[in-house]
Length: 130
Image (cartoon, one colour):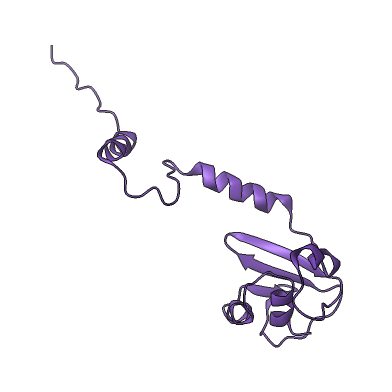
C-alpha cells in the first residue's frame, strides 16, 4: 500500500492530498530516509511522521481496506512514539514567558505594561561620590 494512502486511511491526515504534500516536504520518513508519496510500505515498517513539533513513530500492523473509523485505527497501527516527545510538547507550552490563550485577542494596555515590566531590567544603583 502507498504510504500517503496509508497515512490518510489511519487518520493521520485529514485528506490524502495533505498526506501527499507532507511526504513531498520531507515530513514522512521510513528508516530515517525521506519517502515519496508512492513508496510501498509493508507490515512491520516503522514510519516517522512529523506533525507539529512531535515526531510520531508508527509501526504498521496491517492494511485497512479503506479509511477507517477512529476506534478501529488500533487494529492497523501500533503507536510507538516515546512519551518524552509529548512531555516536551507540554513543557514547551508552559515555558513561554508570557502565555496568552489562543483567541483572546490583542494585549490590553495593562497586559502590555506587564510585559514591558517583565522584560525591563532593574536599574543599577549609581555609585555615590564622597
